Length: 264
Ligand code: SF4
Image (cartoon, rainbow, N blue to C red):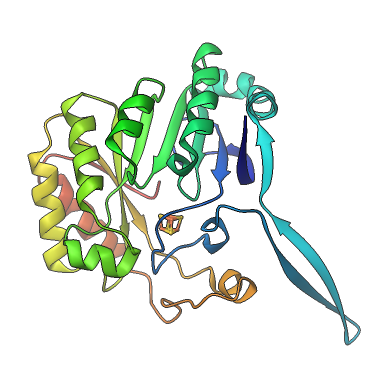
């Protein structure tokens, strides 16, 4: 069985505990206005033309984004860093894009990791059928689960998909006592409105077992990628929040009893 990925990052220190290897799956059913990885959205491998300039001349080169990989090949790559995982309490994180979009491939590689005692995280939007979430849950050590907007219309507007099923999946994980760390991207003027913050806090208070959230600051760093892939960057003039503003948000979520981190 093969999946399509677009990057592998070794020795990552984000997206889970310890030293990690992060596998970026290609394909995402969402289309968030603030996406840092627009090259991840299309599930198929694609190409863009890179232009380098030297002495006033332009040199063009086709660059491929995304490639197919088998479960065995991927397991071999992941296992190559096993010693670092063991030393640091780390493991592998499946990110994207949305890894659940290639659920059959993801389940196979998760099973292999479990057999090989490799700690796994998935970094997910939570947009998948209930059946997929239930099937995958026993093979995942930690879900890094995104919460963006609670209001149905706003979620649809800014991500292109409904939020209802995502919230139901989160509730199922909570009720079944799965290990979940929430991730909340702080997008200026979109997710940090007082209405949305208050709705996210209400959601958090309703959870029985989940008690950790990471606030992910917005960075305006992807304009070049949008140009390369000929996509409109709707956030190109947005300014990130200041450190003080992020700290105030942290205090606000701590005040309801959550363990809060800034960054992932
Ligand atoms: S969920 Fe993540 S990868 Fe998908 S569009 Fe949104 S920001 Fe991009």
